[in-house]
Length: 329
Ligand code: SF4
Image 1 (spheres, helix red, strand yellow):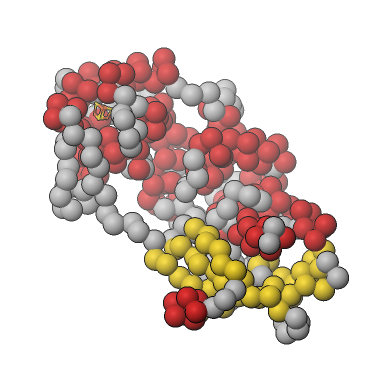
Image 2 (cartoon, helix red, strand yellow):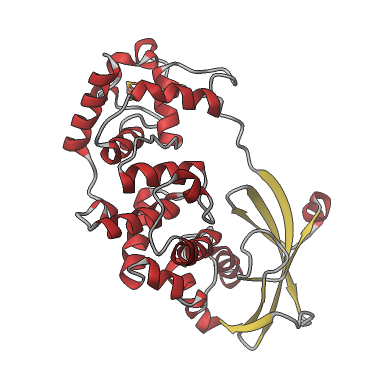
């Protein structure tokens, strides 16, 4: 198949199979831009099915850029609570403020200006250009990468480099329906060219796919093993109240409430007799030793939070996981 027929087949597949998603509803131009911005930020590091309920709640409470720029940090965090990677929410608010101040309240339809906004990098800017503004961009997310790696049977480190994958995107050709087209390719990656057991019989590009011909669907990826880091968390409890601190110390979970913690070395972790838990973060696997303290030693930036009130506080799921491990102990 040539590029034109590939484009036609992909769009035909999309028209018959696309998922009904809240940010794909019939929307005004302004709404489409706002919904694309919010959904694309939420979809960074989070799967579609997890994002859907958060997105619905978010746009109901914060329906446009103006309200996003004005919302209190507390309410913003409440809307984001549980979705994780909280810096995305903070960046989203900063982005809304910047758009209002510097772009007259309009999301810019220029890739460089989009990249100048907090939390928007190569992928998200390309996704916004395509989806919100119908410009001929094909964002290179993990799904699109997987299709290209299989179609061209890319195996070596050089072949799977970002540069090479970006070049290989020309396989998809171009469409005037750029918004649908970008979503169609990503959707095929998510629903058809799945990491395991791809559904090649339903795939609109199977005729051009080398992996399909060779029946070898193994995907090579850059080594993404997370680094393991060791921590000790102090649990101080007084009359059903737990001591938490506002995190100004670590780069993760900035300004959020966590149990007082410090990084320790592997040896100290291994020899400690405390209860231990593991928590996976985006870029590290945390092994945490739970240290019960009898003496309150933290004063500045700390809060005593009642066990029964814990649900009403803006707590990252990280803190809730540690809390759960203590109460279930
Ligand atoms: S034919 Fe199979 S392996 Fe190739 S792109 Fe389609 S789903 Fe993926």
